[in-house]
Structures are given as C-alpha cells and as structure tokens.
Image (cartoon, rainbow, N blue to C red; front, side, top):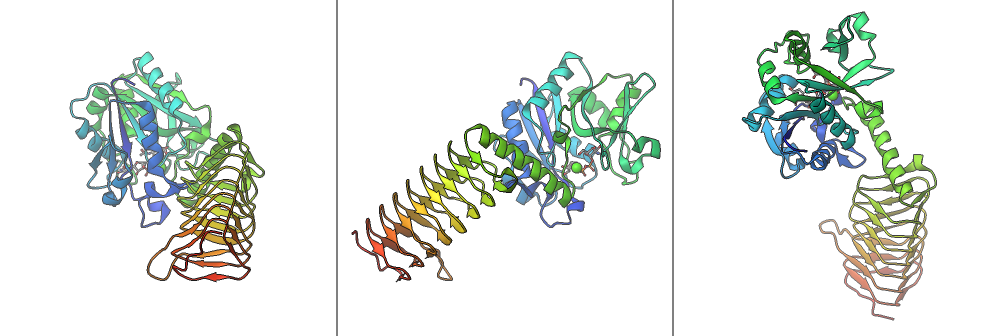
Length: 403
Ligand code: UD1
Ligand code: CA
C-alpha cells in the first residue's frame, strides 16, 4: 500500500502477565507475538514501519523483522506517548499512519486493508477499527453522540456504569492522517486513573475540533482480542491453533482430532498425512506426504520427516531427519539423528545424544534394522542394512559397518 506507514506499539512490560519476559515475546502457537505483527506489516507492503519497544528492548528487538525500524520509548507513559515516539522516526511523513499493537495477533491483513481503504475513501482524519463483544471487559468503549457519531473512547477504568454497558469496543487499531495525528498528540493530557497519555483521547479531541472520525466494524470479533493476561494468551492460542489446523486440513492433511493436535505456527505438512490425537508438532517442523503421525508424539524443533513415514506412539523426535518409508512405531527418543529411508526403529530405541557436556549425532543408514530397546550412544553410525539386536547398546564411536 502506497504512502502508508505503520507504528507498532510494543513497549509495555505487560504487568498483567506477571512475567519477567516482555509481553510481546510470549509465544502464540510457538511464535512470539511480535512475529505476527511483523508478518502483517510485510504483507501490507507499507512504505515505512516502526516498532516502539521499551521494556527489555534489547531482547525484544531480535524479534523485529528487518526493514522495520525500532524506536525506544524511554518511559512507559501510555499509548499516545508510544505513538509520539514512533512518529519521531517517521519524521516529515505525510501520508496515512496505521497504529498496530504488538499484543493483538489475530488481525488479518484483509482487515487492515479494508480499514485503510475506508479511511481514504471517506477522507477521514481518523478511522477506528471497532468490534462488538458480548464481554467487553477490559477494552476501551466507543462513545457516540446523539446523532450516533463517534465522539470519543472511554477506558474501562474511567468509565461509569452506563458506559461500561457499551459493547462496542476499541480494538486499538486506528488509521490517522499523519497531520491530524501530529496536531492532536500534544493536546493529550494524562487526566485518567492511570495517569498515562492515552491515544484513545485523540478521538474525543479530534471530534471536538470538528474533524472526521470514521469507523470499520470487525466481522469476526475474535480478531480484536488483545493479550493482557495468561488467560488471554491461552484463549488466543486456542483460536490461532484452530486456524492453523483448519488451514492444514484445507491443504489435504487429515487431523483426526483437531482439539488435541498442537501444531506450531509455520510447521509444514504435506497432503494425505494423518495426524492422530495428542500430538505436538513444533514450529518449523516439516512432514512429508502420506505419513502417519501419532497418537502421543512430540516432534520438536528442527525435525524433518520425509514421505511415507510412520511415527507411532509415544515418541519424541528432536532436531532429526527421518528418511522416506521409515518406521518408528513405538515409544522412544530420537535426538540429533539422521535416519535414512526404509529404516525400522524398534520399540524403545533411544539415541543417547548427550554425554553431559556435548550433543552428538547418530546416523542410521538406509534399510538398517534397529532392534527393540537399542541404545545408540552418539556420535555413532549404524551402516546400511545393518542390524542391532534387542537390548543392544552401541557405544560411542563404535560404528556398525554396512550389512
Ligand atoms: C488498549 C486501549 C483500549 C483498547 C485495547 C485493545 C489505550 C489507552 N487503551 O488498552 O482502548 O480497547 O488496547 O486491546 O490505548 N504500549 C506501549 N507504550 C505504553 C503503553 C502501551 O508501547 O506506554 C503498548 C503495549 O505494549 C501494548 C499496546 O501498547 O502492546 C497496548 O497497551 P495495553 O497496556 O495492552 O493497553 P490496553 O489496556 O489493552
Ligand atoms: Ca492490550
């Protein structure tokens, strides 16, 4: 989108999380919150983007995508102060400024495009993204005048009983004419219970000066959900998980019980693979076509599974590659391993990949047959078509030759 700049607010500590980790680094389906807003910005193809960080910003900035400038808010003095911090980086930018939040990860690109389109179409000074929630608790409420025009936003903490009953809420996502935003920021005062500079006060001020305030309502109110607490985190995680599972099913993956398939953001699974219940597949894992995975399987970071593989019950696989048509049907642990194709991994096989100091690699070549309850002490290689007997312990560096 041309002549659009984004300001992401992500400086807060997230007091309600009661965490020493900055709120925006808490993962949703295995990916830090900040990652989602970075992708959103990439998809919008905006002219400029700035991410406002504060609490533990050295840590947080590692998760800000290249191309997005970081601005540091020295004191967490409120959302208006955070926007002002971001604007300083944008300098004399004259187009449309979209305010995004680091803690609102369910927003879809289409929604922002629609917001911006409406904003430009109506030549508004500010356009709000609002939602109607059955339980609006915790959100700023949209206040309207007697002509039903939006006249301001009142935060829950400062609202009276009548205002608290309003179900139309502020998602926090707003679009401003840069000039209107600049003109209003200096006029916001910390006259509220938290003694913070609230961006939401900009709406009442713009309305009072006869500026045009417009609004777009979210069709899917879930997109509005901000994460303030651990309970919010769990709720949003659940919704994101449903989206991930839905996308996979649409692409041809069978998920026997989507409610117990925990698949991380960015895991890739090819068609006709079947995921059985109680399976955890972490972000970045790739699984080929026609595989059978689960029940009770944990596939961890860095694992790549080829086509036609069976990974049965109670198995943990970490940082490993598993070749085509290999079977690992019953409990065990495969860590830092390179398993070839058409290998049979017997029940209870363990790669002892850690000697207390270093992690070692276990290589099992094509068509090898690993007997039940084998322990393979890394670093070690089992040759092509070689066999180990039940209960074998293959000690460190005692490689087994082919055949
Ligand atoms: C805010 C809105 C509220 C809206 C809700 C939607 C204000 C005053 N309130 O409330 O109307 O319904 O979001 O989710 O804007 N942040 C900074 N610097 C600061 C303060 C906050 O960068 O000084 C960042 C936070 O890191 C967070 C975002 O701004 O990502 C929102 O702050 P938060 O404290 O979560 O605001 P809410 O209470 O949720
Ligand atoms: Ca919030």
